[in-house]
Length: 446
Image (cartoon, rainbow, N blue to C red):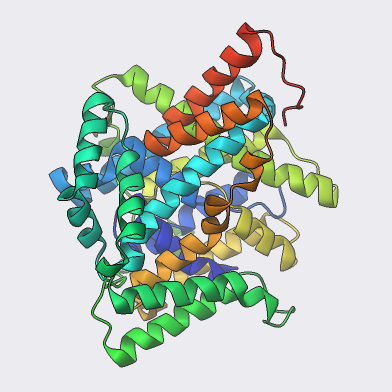
């Protein structure tokens, strides 16, 4: 379980907008807290492609790093995780857990596609080019960049349009790709997507990810790959972190100054100076995050007759995000892939999460083996999970009538603006069509 998640941890940290190694150094504490709070024997949490893209767009990650630097951005992301954690707990106490099940199918379907397009946009720069900054600077100097500027001038909240422009430029200009990086990217993507059909069935899910990442790392070492790599992975000082039983047990994790995080000017720099807007955005983030948990827990309930409590799992999300903020992690939510691996490997209690978390923490001194891993391979891990649905959105195409209009509208708004804005607009759009016009949807929400 711990091994198959390592490439994802690094890749999603890159998606958030900071150094990939931070995904490794900050993953243990949130999952440990989740294991203590959740009521599910298999549910796993962590930074996912969805939470990574949402955090980056809500906080304007690229622009913020360019203006203030990565360390300041880490503080900002950590503070946001704390607000998301508090929002989750408050929402659980007022009964939002049960309400989350009533989100219309059309809104969820469109929202998911829009987010997946954002995930694809975040992965392509490091997948097709030796360095991700190459694509961004090239697009900015092209006609695509002029379109982005025009759209952002007209709609300041359209942060997602840059990613859409990056995809459009990269796909239409294959001559600009780096040959070695693109070859690694396509080879790893195809292997991860097709490996299940020829690998032994007894291998656990995620093995193909480990194999592809390992092969790319070996290539990088022996052939002197000159593109972007994970880089040096620092480890926590042996005296840092938490200490129990008079020092007999130590958990070596780097803790943030939580009090200082509360003073981070997150509202002033990212939400037009409005604390109300910050809290609303954090609440929307929490609600959208919880939809992932609803989907995973409902699946386990249907397949394995495992009952679950929406309020408890929403509180678990909140506790896990508080822990994420305390160690410098981006907001976390339920992870479908990791939860399925947990079920497959035979975990029978929350102890599975706790053991996995401790393995991540105590194995950090050995993670330097990932330092030469090409970012192109990590981008392949991300793309392999979303590209099929982005290219052929079967669930959106299956919608009919006004459901289709809501789904497409939600998808477009999510992709061009941001996930939180897109989700909110989708819900409003649904209300306008189905409530105000009196055209009640025949499709049951779930």
